[in-house]
Length: 459
Image (tube, rainbow, N blue to C red; front, side, top):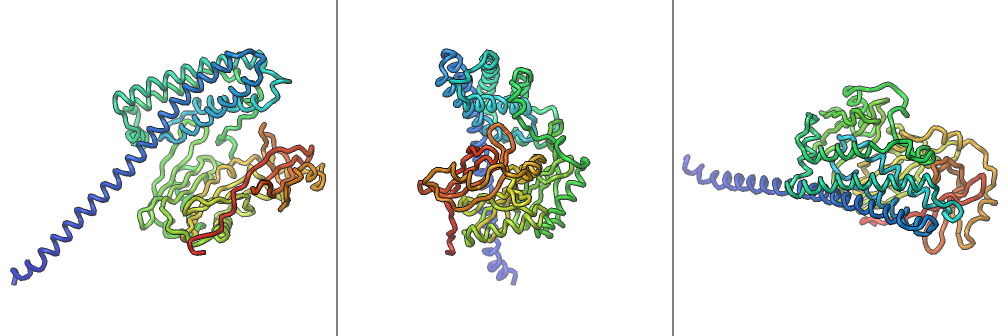
């Protein structure tokens, strides 16, 4: 009898055992593929950052090398400086350094970007670079050389010692100091060097234009980890995810010692997909919600997805917002909603919602712009327009085919809040949104809108 049973069950168990081995091997290979992809992304961002800082130093040198009356070369050089600093900021954001404050380095790049942009866009023939601005460019040239040199040394260490960025991510996640990482030590040295540039070296216009997000701008009392977790559960219940709200959660505090500390709350659904929420420490305001899953084939269009996004905002306490833009990215759609006060859209007060097009589930919410929206925007929205819609419309291009008009508040290039007539229409087979100052009639901004993409796999 046992012989017959063994002849029956042995092949079955052998098949199951072999299947388990194959499954485990595939899981291991997939995990390795994800880790390799992440490491390659980090390495690319780091080497791009190093290259851009060296090019930034060269561009500042070329700008200083030409005659003080060469307004054309000054403009070209400053535009290149602005572009390179913007790209360098993007590179830093792609590195796994979220838990390591780089305030001084990021502040240096942000201020340099502001200075280069606002100087380049003015009429340099009528208002050439002043002696103070030339002096500032020389100081920036020296500072960029020091920061670029530090990055070069760090890059040599990374290549010579074959350092891995994934190890940096693991080290920072443990939150145990001192960190045994040459990369972390190198970036801390870089941050200290960036902080040696004095604040009074910047022009008042740059300092006034700079708006950094800080918990000092928020109302409410500081929350602890338990209160952040309770807020996460409340948000998930409002979002219709009661089962997740009742499950286990992990809470990590981040940004200690920075201007914007907070809590990262994470959980997993039944399929192993991670959900993450970021809350501010002061007031416990939600900054971000992300559900990490790969959507299936699209079955709904942008119209239905927009309704899902609007309902999600209403349920989670962000009511009174209207969609101002929509775009489709593969199997997902992103919608930007702006707050509305007395029929006036407040564009700086906005939230971005990402919707999966397979079932309409909201898989992402970026609410930082709403949390830190300037309070004075409401006051600007309440002001009467000095110029009527018809008068403002006369300033549009004659070929512009108007489709829609409303009032809105925007933040212009010099970070001033202005009330505008907002005209949406078509010209040259493209759709544009044009903002006309409701006080002066001047064009404040022109925005090209993406083409409508309502189609889905299902029709």
